[in-house]
Image (tube, rainbow, N blue to C red; front, side, top):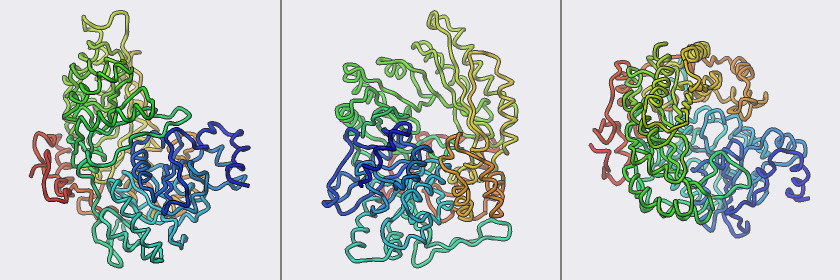
Length: 618
């Protein structure tokens, strides 16, 4: 009986069966006899999350553009579907072919969030494969991974054959071409990995030996068998020339971001000291407005979405934004297509810009002050004043907006209880600003939503050296914040502190966490980013079983000279620069953004042709 026939009766017994059937508009189906390489593009989370991710859409399109490659999508099943798959011995399969991925050539995971790691192991097990690399002896499948979490891949080092550091559009195809040669010449898996380690941006953890000191810190990371001593991330130098999808797969069910998405730029000029993405995606690179307008038209024509989202780490920093909107507004207004800008900077969101994006459909505006006091905003290098925040809110209210969402963090380095109370005070000032305006919208009230996450120190940031607050400290600060909210116009949402602590452990962990990860998974951990599945008790038992203390990874300050688990990996930003920025944070000293003055972070050296592009000026 075919897998498709075995699936049919169980799909009637699970929620949202459309997650598991494929066949959506614009999905790619090929004749397996006419392709050389089959690639399982895996997202270790539910369908609704993975289908919302732009990087998945780009890699799916790039691979399937080649006639010799068939790339299929694979997502983690929800708990009810997993139980049925295990009960009926149905292996994890690709959505396009409904065939088991254990027979594919590559299984590639996108690592967007540290709490997905147990799901990676669970998906390998559901596929019928050993979870540890050393137990998968044959050349195929090669298990690889990339994404932002790959900047410290060590907690997954025992399970993944190779990691892609940085941007994957070009290096993925290079790895596939090398694999085709390996198949033709009958290489072993070890020979393939050894040769792959010499492709720029490829890290093979089995080719590095790590030793530790008595205090638990890393002593040395030594390359083996000719592997490079340092692995440097890959970047796409010209975004206008790189492949971008002409169509997106359109799901049968609602997903988190159910819209067309355009990436207007990569990188960020700002240098917020807590923000990993702002450092690991350097240098800043823009797409031309005409390229973006063409891509938007293609997606609207082929996918039928009624919303286009202009995405980047800081979309209002895109220099061509107003020109792009001038090109897009005539046809989006005519076709009633909404333009969304999900990441705006308060200090450069002009009234003209707000008026432009409100022409088709008004929705709430979202800004990220991150801290409630000026001292702390300076310490984290937010480069944002209270007057800029309030004046932007006034402009938004004049344009007819009545809902504002503000993102903050608690537990930031140098933070005091006064800074925590400052979050409530700032939110109250936004409410007061609305009601003091003579030109405010009549008959309407204002709603300010305060969303508060817990600070997580991440590699390749100036705060990678800092300890994270304990769960008790974080909960105390959350209570302090709630006690200072004085208006019903302000609603507060905050994150669970236990998940934030585990995120910090995995973000800065070493490969001694591999057995902890496996034990937590075997005890039932998977989909840890979902509250109904997460159990800190289960994780604490796994840590105790292997004699490791999570506080060593989460709540300990690192010396500037310490060898960290990612010391042999290079994301373009020098350690010297990160140390200097950390010292400035403790003085609440700011660093200008990249367009004001180059601070010499080192990212300009990533341009392989030697030509330094603005704003990365020497």
